[in-house]
Length: 576
Image (cartoon, rainbow, N blue to C red; front, top):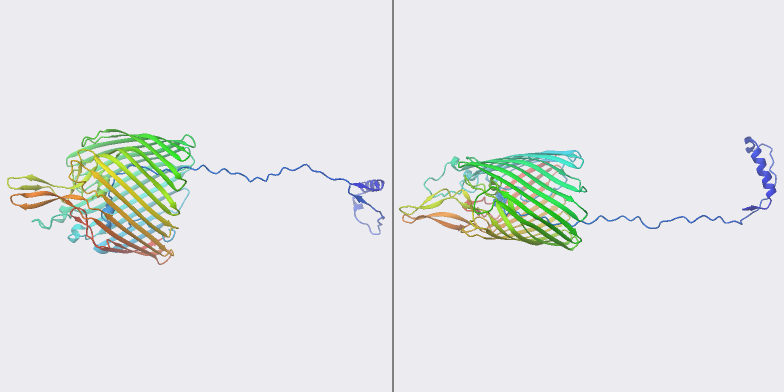
């Protein structure tokens, strides 16, 4: 900018600068000289161009990881709570009508003189650790045969705790259990009927302890889960089992696409009965290299196992391939997979007696050799809330156990003579390998956690050679279940179980000349309907009712052992 009178402005500036500070104040009687200043805009101030970034900050999306369907080699087991649903109280995982406060107790009474109690006592959510106590008891004074002669009870107490130290979790579990059953599958027409109560009584004692350490940092290159445990089991007679075991599940990420996984299992069992003591060592190692290539996931490895069992002609040392391919056809919607493998499956009396509590004494237990095995299937989520899964497994099993009624017919001078006890079951094995075809399918639909419905089914085709039948292993089983949460006040649930018939062995007396003879008999087919309702009266108080075997079919899942007919249970739940 320029001024029209520069001399005048320079003189004014000099006078102002030299004046004392008090000269800034206007004095009374001061006079302002008249002056005229004219400003003319003749200059343009130009500033350098500023750097402006109109691009948005770009954040790289996290790399998608293909979730591979977990593959294991499970045996087709028949849990006790499925064999006799009338004993069970909670048949499927229940939704909670409102968030739990951390603790609750339940109590109920029902038909057949049934008493039920449960306590869940745990600390609330904490970043330092967790600990708690679980108690459960259910008993029925009477049962389906001769009232108290077929009663049963199960009681368990569990303690658990974890502590979190940075990315490491250290924890432990301790469980005590006692179960009471009766061998009520006796013949009511024999001369020694009714049997003495003490002669048909069976009691199991269980103790399980485990300590573990695992890495809970999801972004760590090395992931591990190491556990060491001890299981103790004994029955009312001379049988007992001690099992010291260790498990390892680990993986190390070599890169974003490559990973090395090493899993291991170690177990040493000392089994004792009236025949003596048997040692059963077991070790298995599964190293594998896993690679993800865009939509293709590849796992290459092997399963190396050793078992000390000498039953049958199965090798003690085993080596199986572990190859698996999975291809993502549609992202997050459809995955197909297949592979070949095999593994040893640890079999213990601890587990067997949860499947069949009427197992006889002095059983020869052997680990199952499953392999080589071929499998293929798919996992799909075609719509929101809908899951469809299917899998086909073809395996060649050695030392696969079956349950058959005890006893035998010995030729006599006049007719056959029956010896043994058909109310108790023995473990029997095919002398050759058993071929198994398993077809599994399931469909589950979840509608915003308010409504859930699902269906699961399995077909098992067993080809046995030295055995007359695949004793007490049904060819088909299915479960249809549904739950509905109404306004967070009323929860309704239903289940329908079906089992096809299987086979056992019966012993009939025909005539004085022929005597007894063994007959292979089919068991009943199973159709079991259960309904449950929970209603929340207050925020912390709710009531529930459960109806089991509503069709009233006293079917025999195991030959000579009918289950309870129609029975109900009603009780109260209190949260605190």
